[in-house]
Image (cartoon, rainbow, N blue to C red; front, side):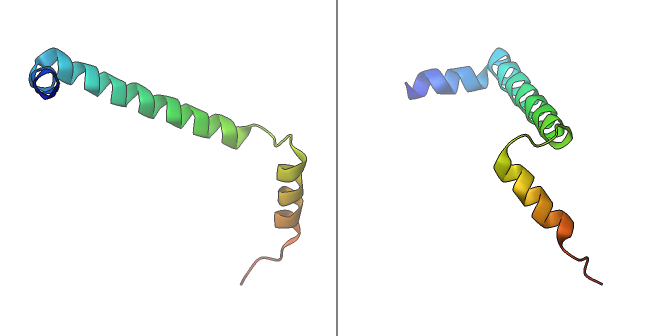
Length: 60
């Protein structure tokens, strides 16, 4: 098994697959973060947290 992994890591195709996997995973995570930041909270818990945060005075 170790030989198979070493052979895969040494080949150019294996490196390209790893590069593309990291790139796509990072892109999906960035898109998910943006979507979650833009979408309005629709659960009672997140709504209650939002209300508490909005009523807190600003420091300074």
